[in-house]
Length: 79
Image 1 (cartoon, rainbow, N blue to C red):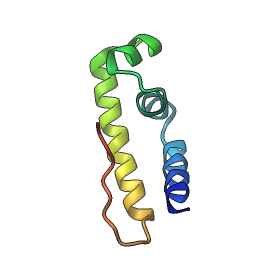
Image 2 (image 1 turned 180 degrees about the horizontal axis):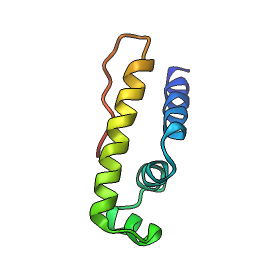
Image 3 (image 1 turned 120 degrees about the horizontal axis):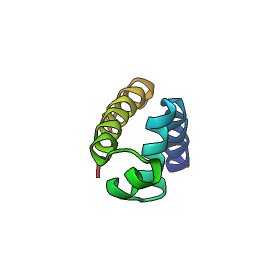
Image 4 (image 1 turned 180 degrees about the vertical axis):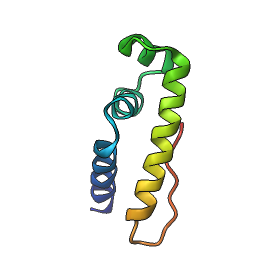
């Protein structure tokens, strides 16, 4: 049950991201594409994918840490 709630919270947080960040995160973590593949799909530079992903993960970390009521300090997996 907790895992479903955590996934729902993550999904909700991802949905609040600006469109480009949401696309990059979705392609990286849900479609499991590599940065160079994401760059091809979106027609952008691979370095732009990296910086967009980094900004998105920073924002998700902030969103999830402010909405965490359990007191844990869980980190966003950048991997």
